[in-house]
Length: 213
Ligand SMILES: O=P(O)(O)OC[C@H]1O[C@H](OP(=O)(O)OP(=O)(O)O)[C@H](O)[C@@H]1O
Ligand SMILES: O=c1cc[nH]c(=O)[nH]1
Ligand SMILES: [Mg+2]
Image (cartoon, rainbow, N blue to C red; front, side, top):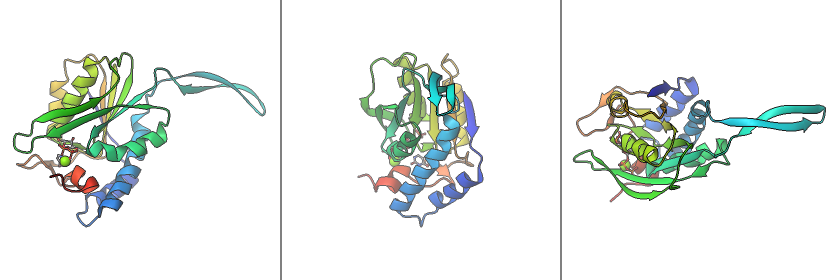
């Protein structure tokens, strides 16, 4: 697994306001949207392209276009939805599939409650969106799900990651032949005893969409 921390002053600036507990939901949603567009630039560095012949007003040239099959963008509900528009701004022709996953806040185990993905992901490049990589349980399960369907190249975009989650992913995904990359805005200090990222930003889903009952 490859981990890339997108180290950029604009990302650090926006993350600071995102983390701030006084930031309200509308501002939080806007910042998450802006951040994912910045992360997406890094995350799509290896997106597959194929040659395309065109004519400019001055003459012929060969450029590139996104290759087939199209990339698949997979937001992990609920919080990953807050990253979807920003990602699609950069990859407007990508397909979108959905995974609904929730972490049990007592056991910290992730479970899948919804899935709407193509049955066959053979040869597909997949971009998983989830703002928080905490214990890594959710992302590890999501990656396995996509690999079991045939995905052969997976990049996860996370706004924040914990060192414990990155280490767990490295260990749990070590047996996969499929390349997995994590692009994150920052790797924070640690997890607290409730499995929250420290300093983190709190519960991303609640801050985007309100407290879940
Ligand atoms: O790395 P982990 O320890 O597995 O935790 C990370 C997961 O927790 C949050 O989702 P949550 O379960 O709160 O669901 P939500 O997005 O519906 O709020 C977050 O959006 C990740 O999916
Ligand atoms: O810090 C954390 C950990 C898991 N999920 C969140 O939303 N925040
Ligand atoms: Mg949540």
